[in-house]
Image (cartoon, rainbow, N blue to C red; front, side, top):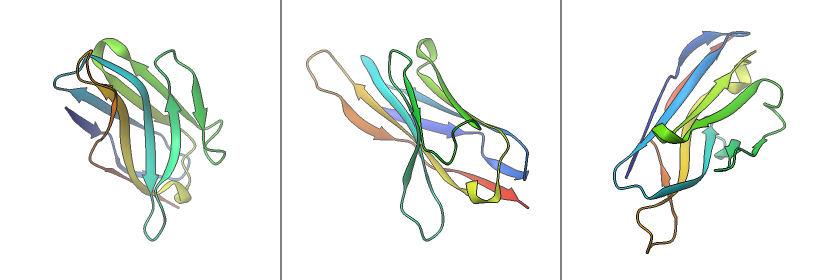
Amino acid sequence: VQLQASGGGLVQAGGSLRLSCAASGSIFSISAMSWYRQAPGKQRELVARITSGGSTNYADSVKGRFTISRDNAKNTVYLQMNSLKPEDTAAYYCNSDIRINIHKVASTYWGQGTLVTVSS
């Protein structure tokens, strides 16, 4: 199983970016899908999470600005980021709980980071 993240880049404060993360490989089912971020010198933190049923939760710092969504047919999770601030600058990582077959419990998989830089 692989998670491929994309969509990072350089944007001015107030701008928008959309991150995508596609899961591929031997996948039986995907439960929760999440985005984390890690700024230089800081711990990795949860940004947003979405369950298989579509329930979402967000870090307080991004509520009202970021929206997480998923396309189950494409095994893809998205993060729409609006009104970006310099403090949103970080490497963003996707994370999914995936079962590879009916006989296995879910394991957590991580994608590679995609860098988001917000200039002031």
